[in-house]
Image 1 (tube, helix red, strand yellow):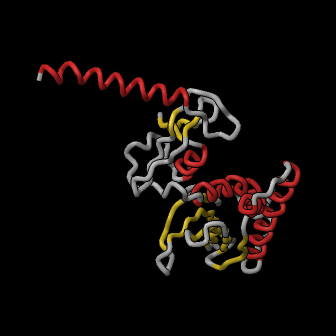
Image 2 (cartoon, helix red, strand yellow):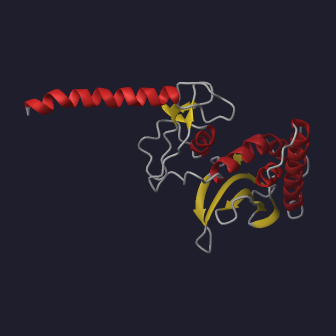
Image 3 (cartoon, one colour):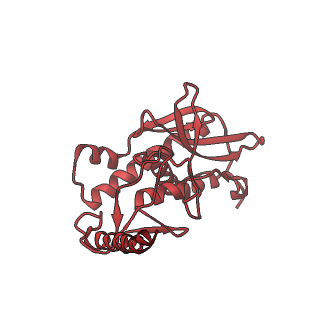
Length: 233
């Protein structure tokens, strides 16, 4: 007992020293960033797989005291988690980009979509769903989605849905009351898959075209079935 009471503190101090040295010597996972010290992303998925990235103070994201990489921070925010993720036991797979993508698309589409519908409906009639949530499709495949709802002039609910299947993780579908109006892959994902380098101006243009295609599809889907006279100013 006396032997271990002397050695254990030394081992513990050695562990702390090694951890500190690793944090000080490991570079940030952001490309071209060599800043130290770094902290690991603490994201652990439902299969107990850990994110293997580490981030400096400038490039990390902290949510509820948890240090996260930007991708998994977006995933956590998309799921509506605002506190620490330490007790979250059913987080999506480490390499699953879909919740983050759904949330990103929703954030970009929400203002123009509400403006478009607002030409015909009062904003008080407009209901937004959580940024991202998972359901099981008819064939058992996990489907990630986000949605908006509003009422037509007869009080009938209209459901606009963004959806991405886990077995087609880069294909975005847009549905109006369950009927598909659009499907396609965001251009920035196509560029990433092909290893293309795109300047900021072209990237912005392609994003605008992609989003406008979705908005046009929603307008066609809504207006083909429901007719809204412009609301009074």
